[in-house]
Image (cartoon, rainbow, N blue to C red; front, side):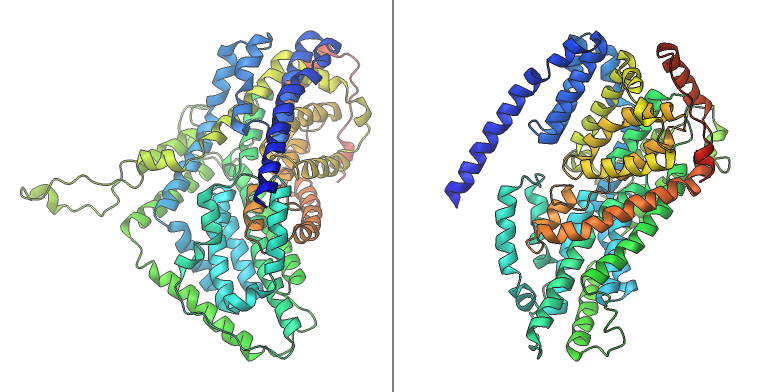
Length: 605
């Protein structure tokens, strides 16, 4: 096995080298066959797209390529490329990551998770619902990967209390062996050693309880099947909930912020998308999707059984639920009373969310109207709040200290140290965002976006509602095999130009495309949360494929419903806005034969 593993690594390293070397050479004819500036920009974008999809280079390193290639090829000067890596959108995302670090530093997320599980109950279907609600809420503010890695050990601890470690894992040894082979054959996202440790072994520290051996039921096969299915349902619900929850806030996942940044690049006059308006649109969509996803997972894996819903539960299952309730309660009590630091972080977190939501919610005047218009953005709000974390004391301050001359002059420990922020904030995501914004700027300045718009004639006859469904399906399928961040960077310029050709509000296509790239449920390689859950050894590829297929379909349909109902009033999607019209006039001046398609079909929806 060791020799096979070494051979696989060698083959992969050779393949990666070939991709790095051959991709620029194979794509060279594009520069010759297209107009000079547009061809060069498309060449850079395609090279980056191949590197992103194959991960021949680290994603963040690929995102830095515009800094060198755009100036060398005469597409953009460096003084226009480099600022794209530090837009205010990047700082909004950075403030969210720092706030998440403070929450994790003081274990506030764990207290929230255990409290929710205590409230929902310990029946399998209820516990799956509790897991999904908790994971999605945490994923709105933490990264999807961190939320999944934190919740999996809790799920494992509860499952072992329900079924006992030996019985629950008896029929899973074979699956674990198959998964280990799959992990070597399929290139999964690289998960750090720390996260793998959290996802697989931390549960031993989470609860130190005596192993409970459950009496063997009469129908051993059915009981073992039930246990294995419940275990799978628990584990598969967590990464799915993390992906769904990340769509509810602008800072929840990188594609949402890429949309905001590219809107400012393509349509500087667009000001309808901010933290508050996005939350009003995306939060109800998240709740609907979570509810339907929970019903599907619970039905598929035995949490909800329509045949046996009226049958009395066996004593074994009732005893197991009592033990699970005791484990959750004991784990919560181990946290002790809420510390001053936790209270301070919770207060600042609530203030962070409230100020972002109320800055400019659109349906009512926000507090930003008290300042000069255009000066205060979401980034200003986020950075102002997280700055407090670095000097606010983690211990309750005492007034007596000021008047006691003999008191020791000990330094106050802040809620978050800069060293801790450096260690926990994924700085590579900041570079990845910047690469996307630089790519969008290159498309705009080189005229590539106009060239793309001129080649979308066949799609002008497609009804806008059908276009939304097609866009979401294509992107959801594409992101199953590529990073969702890379996917949205590639597709957003195309969607913006397609909307101009269809004469619909660009947000009508760009928002579904952005959210759709987070709906990657079918494969372990689709997202890091999927990979973490799969690496636990209790899931097969076919489990994720059959569950994720219907999840993808539900996501597409719910997104189409949302964009054609309440999103129309929030983002004024029923009209072609002036800020998009200016962009469209620029295209028309370069491409005179542009057909105007009315919004009559959109307004009839």
